[in-house]
Image (tube, rainbow, N blue to C red; front, top):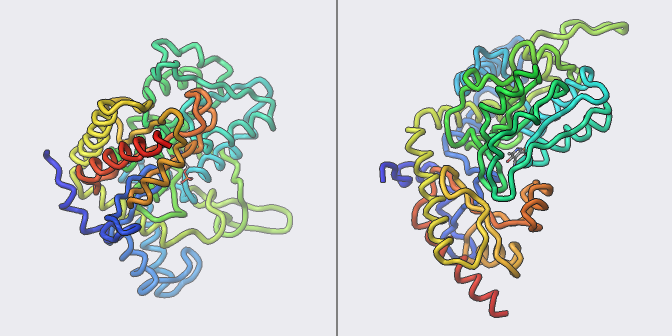
Length: 405
Ligand code: PMP
């Protein structure tokens, strides 16, 4: 195998502790990844050497903090190949970024306009659009997966001259299926719709080029790509960011304020009200550098290899329904008839194995699959083949045990 996870596992000391008396096997990476020491060090270093508020003060520490903060923005721009730092808006994460766009575009929507999403969306890329539709009289439409888990061969008819916004995930957090994004984006652009890509599940796994994607907005969370929690990114094309009405107002995002009026700041600051998550931004930039320093195709191939290995072993074992695609995914999502996913989760946890059981914030998708939830094992670059096998062994053991009850 071309990639050896032990080459970077030492960067993640959290993984070397026991859990319930067993080696910790962390397979809940689609929920959040662990953070390499470099990221942890950058946060400590920030507080030890340059803690001050950014953009405001004119003193040594403030200049230092501001420089690092703005340098971090440059790093993010490079990481996703944005044309420049003014396209990068700091957010709390994917959820805040999508809400920012939904609220910011509200003034452009009217009754009977259409907002199109897919049936794979996380609630974060559904509820903000649904609520926007309620408020404006627009219609929320859903481009569905077929019952066999494929995309319809012809879906262009979902994109109409009323489609004003198309928002889709790159990869489903719940079942690992990818969207044929480029084709969908092309259809959306033909209708002059705004396009948003939810990259929350993609950024950790493969390089993102927002200019090649040519979407209006691209959003992601730091904590799912080895960065800190509470920090994320809204990338936008210039014209797309310019039309957004800031959903929060206050300090930092203004140029001049009187009692009569406010002159807003230029991008990216216009959309960033209040003191930002400075150490989060610095940590995220380090997480980007961590990923850029790796052989990313090799990491991605390894993560897919682990998921495929689990898929093969579990389909051979039988007695369960697997919802993830066989290939080209980094997670395996499944259910076992007559055994609740939470019971399997509890058994796995008792053996030190961390996975996720539940609806994965995708109730409509679960309803379409006909289950209340699934059990999901999701892989990151530090996971080993032994961990993948332990998951399979203990899951099969749990199914045997719980079926007898
Ligand atoms: N979209 C997808 C595809 C996700 O996986 C998640 C997190 N599970 C989100 C959006 C929301 O991300 P956050 O909670 O970091 O805002």
